[in-house]
Image 1 (cartoon, rainbow, N blue to C red):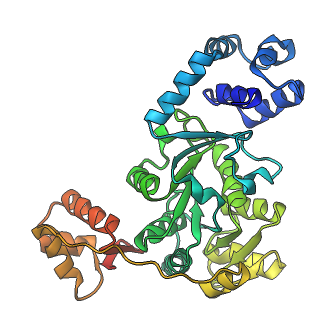
Image 2 (cartoon, rainbow, N blue to C red; image 1 turned 120 degrees about the vertical axis):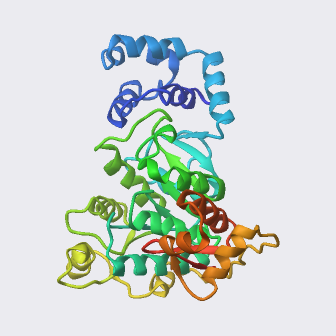
Length: 358
């Protein structure tokens, strides 16, 4: 491990701001290593005494090796900005994160990707559009990138998983503090079937500042950003701005001019900041990506309870209320079966809490 990479590994253990790490690198310049970090009085003044002493305690080869081993045991891989595995797409942006904590398939970082972002409370139109674009793009082999938030983000992630495609979730917190907490199960599935990443150490909690920062990574990792539905005041505007700053394509789905939820995509189209898209094929053509056919996961064994659910879904889409009532299952037990069937690719989740056969 290079000395400058070792320094970043040391700093990654603590909740140190991007701005402060940038300052440290600026001060040390070409002499970027742990010894010079500890000797430099100007750097010492950047920290309160307790934090600096804690950093000093951890600044040994044995401690660093132990830290990396602990991450590995938690199935977390740490990639620093100076690592050979650092994704080229992020290396090209001016405010590239210094660390990437990763759970899952890191090869996805170098694959063709489209970010799908938007409202946390989309309308039925927004749900349908997001579902449709996510499905076709994921089936085409494009990695779907989003932020694990409610609404458009979670619809995009889930649909990619539904069709056995790949998805990357970029967090605004550390792995031990998934936000929103209701998406812990979704995060676990993404870690096992796609990739979960964060620039924050595992213990870090989400803050109002961490989400705009998170959005630059979403934009940076993607070959284009699709906004399906969002108001003009939505945090989605940060992802759009980052994409434009980085020279990425921005795609917007036109919506009802009287709907607040379509303000941002309509404004993007009107101002010429992005492309109006009315089908996933518009994006595929722009990114010059040929559609691939992904095989569904086939299952051979079903429990009696699972078969009961499938029988109910055989004549059309059903919501959880209908399924719970007609299966005579407790809602929590039903959701457990639904999740298992979804992971196995037998059923798929639809907008509005509905399910259908895959």
